[in-house]
Image (cartoon, rainbow, N blue to C red; front, side, top):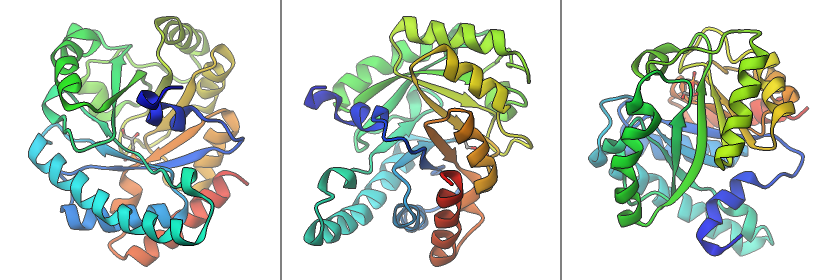
Length: 268
Ligand code: 1GP
């Protein structure tokens, strides 16, 4: 893949392991706290940082958060390259995961350019994307073509996005969406249960998506421990996203310990 697709090629690279990414909501924490949590996550073995979340996130607080995280990570990357051959593996992309065009920031490495495929509203199927596309071009950040499917219980994103939720056990429907995503040329497929969901995405649905397509499958929403992450990983998830989990810890060392355990268990 060309230099222009640097972040996408990192995300779709398969090495037999399921990877973890931390989701930071800039509305929930100061840039400094976000940076400390990201450092703990990266030290624990997380491979990507997503920035997104609430509807009241704007470019200003996204910018400040991305910059603080970048500065923190640059120090770590610099330290690691001094004594190892892991140069390429040290790439920890900072990727925007926006609710809409209003939360774009040119300071990030990439942005999930997504269609909420099971939305009933044209706004989330195509309209926000048409507003966002010229802004992405102008800011020169890499768009990552992604199908986004909201599964039950769906939470706030399901409501705001007017999703016709994919219900537990509806394999046929998830298979059809996975194929549609592939035929559209998307490279990533995100199965979302909603932030803070009581139950994560049904593993049967993950399996159905895995069997139906070759896309990189990302799973998030309500995953609180390594056991739930392993279940999703065994069903075929390539990436596991956690948001709320990190926000429960204010002590960076404790968070690092928890996430280290989480990542080990996920791939056990
Ligand atoms: C939300 O899937 C993510 O988009 C993360 O959810 O906050 O429940 O980990 P949690």
